[in-house]
Length: 113
Image (cartoon, rainbow, N blue to C red):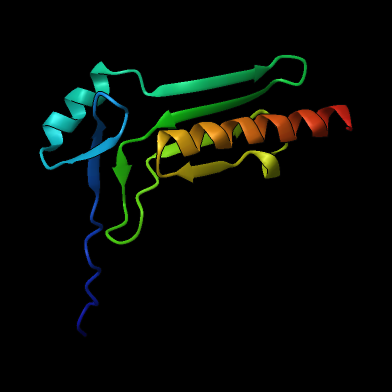
């Protein structure tokens, strides 16, 4: 019986330039060094009374070879499991706008307004 070959997952690696725009790099050790030496979190909002945290960060890895790489991730933690979600964005501006929309939505949910 012939085994079915699974195509290898193609990971693409990115760092940020001086204007926080993603730039693809092809040397994994260069990427790893950059990731370890730079701040990756751009915004963190802690809603203390509810224990909810919303964090927007640069992840630097895309597992897709087609389409837009969603390299910025906004994560919600501290809510009910079904509400703890992650949202991707292609640019820092999009990610920060998304972060603010999520914070406002959660505040409305928590206050009932």
